[in-house]
Image (tube, rainbow, N blue to C red; front, side, top):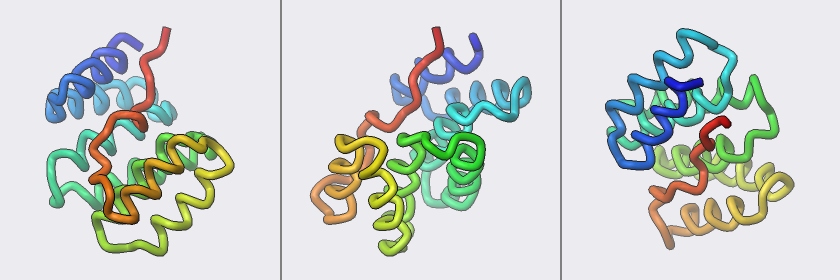
Length: 128
């Protein structure tokens, strides 16, 4: 878990490329770590539109592994919004309403264009 936790620290510092490398290394050790897929997707998304499809695949994998991972719905919804797919963003918002009202409100603000979705509330936390 040290590699994953190092990635979270880098992510919170805004060092997305270095965080990406840590999450990829963590997934090489345990491909079924949903939180690492979520945070890798965030790292990719924050590095630009060229990474959107790859980010989407990691959000999807995170949700396959852990269907109640609210953070993944939050940021996948942000990604859908950035990709212009508001219908799928709203579908993620609907699911998020049942999981985490605070994150649902943040996603709603992104969909409505009131914020840009770069906050860190949807980052999966470090492990103890």
